[in-house]
Length: 561
Image (cartoon, rainbow, N blue to C red; front, side):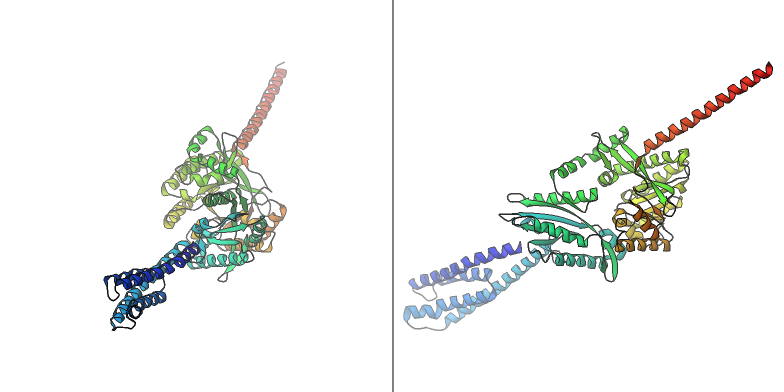
């Protein structure tokens, strides 16, 4: 944007300055033909003098004012009379120079302030990178295309909450430096900075998308790695959404498509997603989620499913995690990760929490589950005093031992941290256990406060998938060590094979969860199977009782005979 304005300003001056000289010469000619001297027409020279002072630097303005004073002074006298008469022209020239100097100085300051405010409006103050507003000024090559990549690091809240603002800013600068260094071999790529740990990259293509593929491959060197900032090692990872914009296509629309692809990456847990029209249709479908949700519960379309949690040493099932699935009218299934973020912005989220709690309690009441513990996802945005009171009251009225219930806090909250702390204490006071995802923004904000009751730390798939690498394994060891030092148990999620199970066990994790042990099962199917088993057992018991009764009657008859 600033480069374009500089170019237009330079082009303007190339034409405007010569015109001012022509205007000054015209004024001199007018004065000359009207007799010269201090005639009224001489005052017209102030027009080009002031115009020059407004639009050009101070030195040139003074030069032009001096030349104008000489032109209407000794030069004019010499042309008309052949000699210079008096020194009054010096006074006029001094006035010209003084006025030009003042106006040029004020104009220069104004232009400098404009450039400063323009820079602030178009650049990130921390990294000096152009911000997202500048993407719309990018040029699409006439014989190629422009790719727009939206990139978001998923450690934002964790870093800020756990280590403080100064460390967070140093982390932002360090990541910006790493990205800048990584893009140096690609002169056709430009890095932009958004809010927090959000970045964008535009890449010009002139014949193929080979450079884009190379950049995406290079970016993977910063994904899922440990980064040392201020002698502290942190885990960083990111997701990317991108699109390719061609000639005659709208750049603003391209930015929107790249953003949709980025959100799709998070929903589908993909590192990189390229925009397609199916994503747009997918997001259009989510608009109706909030309005359909209440009726979906009433129709029984929202159902609870569960997955078992196993002891790391013995692999014996010690509990289950319960989460929601939405089977929509068209038969498609949505996971909680897809619709909960949308419900979090409405009053429907509390309805979902209570529905899931009641489903969990109903399952917990089955005789076959008498020894199991249950984990229910509880959105952090629903941690208000009213919802917490209703949640605790529902558990108490159920007659289920609260010690068997654990809530896993998910997402982030806009509630005051002190209010959240008191609500968590209230829950824990009623013997309900509390779990946090290690990468949860809320966990990082309260982990350093020793009076917050935390029973379990869950280590998500984003970390456990890297236990086959030394850095990933070191991260799991670090979390387990921190947890054990503070009397907290750990659960590693997303375990998909025996190697990951063994690595997490050796790293000190207490429990394991994932497809290696069990796939999520709809709770209603499990209930139906349990009831069928119970009915079969009852039928067998009734059959045995009937047989014993018949034998007793036969024996009685024999004795009578």
